[in-house]
Image 1 (cartoon, rainbow, N blue to C red):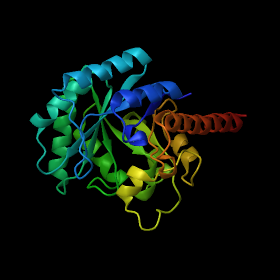
Image 2: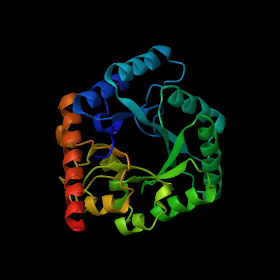
Image 3: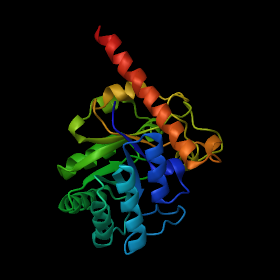
Image 4: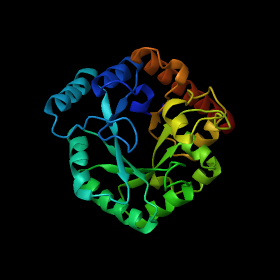
Amino acid sequence: MNRLSLAPVTINEVEPPELIAAAAAAGFDSADLRVLGAPGAAPVPPLMGDRPRVAAIAAACADSGVTLFSATGIWLTPDFSLDSALPALEIAARLGAEQFLAVGNDPEEGRMTENLGRLARAAAGFRLRLALELMPYTAVNTLAKAARMVGACGAPNLGLLIDALHLARSGGTPAEVAALDRARIAYLQLCDAPAQPPPGLSLRAESLTARLQPGDGELPLLALLDALPSDIVVDVETPVAAERAWSPDRRAARAAAAAKRLLATWESRKLDLSD
């Protein structure tokens, strides 16, 4: 079965060591690390310079056997500064992360693409891959634009993050994903959702608070998995409103079970089709 990682948004209110412990208890292979907060979101205490928190994260990984997969998140805004991003890359690499997530929100595509390339080259210096995430409420709001930017940079360590919800809400389809160069796909963020956005909820609010567990909604998840590399890392990002009061361990266990059930269905379907 594909490697599974637990995204911080799934259990948004806990510190990284608690997320790592919940991931271990639920059977995840990896967890993600929020290094920087998103503009306009609740503040995230920066890890840079906080030696006790960094040590606690390293100890949680060592004790549990859970590795860090992706770190988040650097935003490519008009005032982006590479020098300001370097400490975040350094701390992610020091803790053993493999990927760093970038979000593009600059109305000038040329400048944003140039900064993406500079960031990718800097990430390579830390032996990190960089993943650009399509989000329909940012400047990188279509799969075509995200793919164009990644292609223009030409950085071998740069890829596309495919988020099931963002793809659907941007109007993208599994067929469009299947047409991409698979070597340029970094990983999958897996969740489910209704076919149409919930009324009265912004796309960003739905993304951060109102996703569904895989198999509980109407997104074409099996077709999306068919369009992706067969060994893709699956990052489970499922902040489910109805589960918000549950303990971290219970929420992580529910997310892992739902993802594993969907992947098992996908594997079984592939075997049936090959007969």
